[in-house]
Every structure is written in structure tokens, then in C-alpha cells.
Length: 267
Image (cartoon, rainbow, N blue to C red; front, top):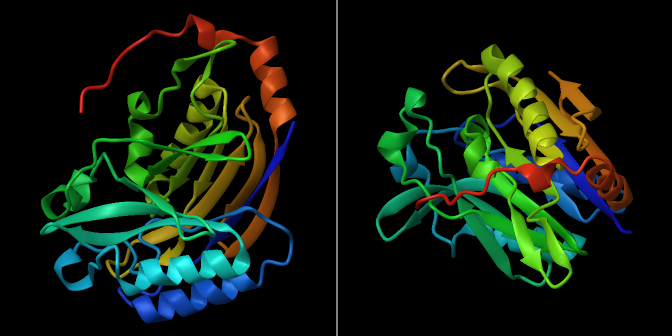
């Protein structure tokens, strides 16, 4: 059974300042000396959670995607986080999954945060992205998606040997405000328990351009919902090694997923 190494970067962000954020994040990424396979950045890591996409959006051929490609190649890591992307005249809060060979996948945030007007400026995605690394499967989601458990709900898939869960790790990148940190921590724990998977939640710290404070509270939880890592308030870079055998043992000992409801999500 393999392990999977994931590095979390919990950081303050320079409001709507791409150059400053990319310089800061590059220094943090290159400071990681421990071997790692995936580096996870917060939601809208190049700008903060801005509702000014017409001024800040880039294309998939833009400088930030090129930056991700260069960092991923040079550090030999998978680099992921979301940024503002324009495509066909529409704006998306898009998570990029950048691999060292320059190949990428992406996920457009499904649930747009209407309370802050995100649904007035961005278009919602309608497809999940489940990536594969070393035999692990990772479900990649963004911030407000956390409040909608159907979108992350584990389903059993058919294999030549029977059925198996469709993913092993659930990742959320976020700009989740401090005032609702209790919901953030509680829902991350619930997603781990109900889906019998590891959960990685990466949030920012600091006060954004709308004077909204963020406490971070980045978390890694095992499939029992037990905390493997938690950091509140402070910037931090942390690498954790997830154990596939622990996941397999929990699922075998407590085979709850076989009793789950079967369903189909409409686009």
C-alpha cells in the first residue's frame, strides 16, 4: 500500500495583487524541503476572493497558469489551487490541477456563494474532477461546495473485482471567513466520516480587501473524522503523509458505504 504526501500552504494573500501573491507563494513553495507530491494553495490564490473578474481574470494561456506550469515542472510536484479564469466571455472560479509534465485538469466551482454575490459575476461548473495519483483518487472541490454534501457524496463504482469507492481523498481549497469557522471545521469532519475518506481543507488567513478576517483553520482529517493536522490564525506550511493501508483497514472494518443510497446528480 502506498502513501501520498500532500503539502498545505496556509497564507495571507495580497488583495487583488497577482504579482505579489505569485512571488510570495513561489518563495513558500520553494522553501518546502521535505519530499512531497502535491502542493495545495487556497481559493483564488492569486487575487483573494474578489468580485472583480472583469479586471482580474486571465485565460488558460495566461501568466498564472504559466507560473503554475513552471513551478510544477521545476519542483516536480502537482500544484493545485483556484484562480479567476475567463473563457468564451464567461468568468469561472477554476481550480487547476497542474502536473509536472505540463498536463492539467480543471474544476469549475459548482456552488457559487450568492451571499457575497459570486453568482452575479461567475458561471457555475457542472462536472466534478477526480484526479489520480499513485493509485489514489482525489476529489477536488472549492470552498462553498463544502455546504452541499450531495456534490461530494461517495458512490460505489464497478470494477473487475467488484465495487469500490470512487475516491480516497477529498480536497477543499477555500477563502472561508473566520466568523463561520465552526461550520468549516464541522462540515469538513462530516465529509470525512460520511464518505470514509481523508479530507484536506486549505484556507487562508488575514484580512481581505473587504475587511473580512480569515482564521485559516486548515485541517487534515482521517476517514474516522479524527484530526491529523490543524492550524488556526497563523501562516503555515505543512507536509503530511497519508496512509492507504489505514484507509483500506477502516473501510474493511466498517463497510458502511455498501449500504449507501444510489443516486444520479443532474447537471
